[in-house]
Image 1 (tube, rainbow, N blue to C red):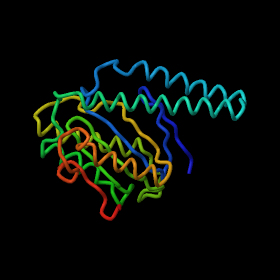
Image 2 (tube, helix red, strand yellow):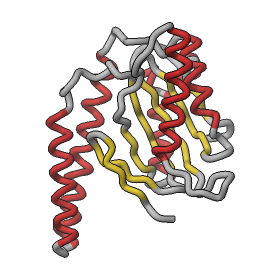
Image 3 (cartoon, one colour):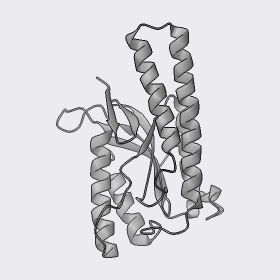
Length: 220
């Protein structure tokens, strides 16, 4: 199945049907404007260097070094992103409200068994973590791409939450942060990070007590 790389907003998003993902996205006001611009520019520059190196048939050693630099910087980016999310105390809406949590969970579970397989979900106060695997084909025998699923999830959940809150306008940040799952160990780490997010944030002592958390039955 062909890969699709899409530059949507600030970061590259690598998409391939059948791929497992660890995905994070947040409310539109969760991250201060321009807070991560330096990281973004550096990531884009390294990615441009990688493409230039490929085009000019650089050695495997050079390409490996560039890819390692990209991976290290992306980890720093995500750490800074997570830190900013947990520092915020005021939100455009509170996703931990029962109605909002249910709207997000409903949207995330809609395609389960049809176009994807859910592993873990955590709806926090101002952001969402999601671990899942896309199917290669949908019910119409067409490739399943991440951007299409995410667009559906964000649009549906935003409509329901805005209606419940009595507000209008954008709810979610346009940018989302996806990491492709490399192997079973990576999958377990992503799932454990997701379900334990409320514990790490000091909101509960046991992940099972956070109403916005869902773990696929029989995962462990």
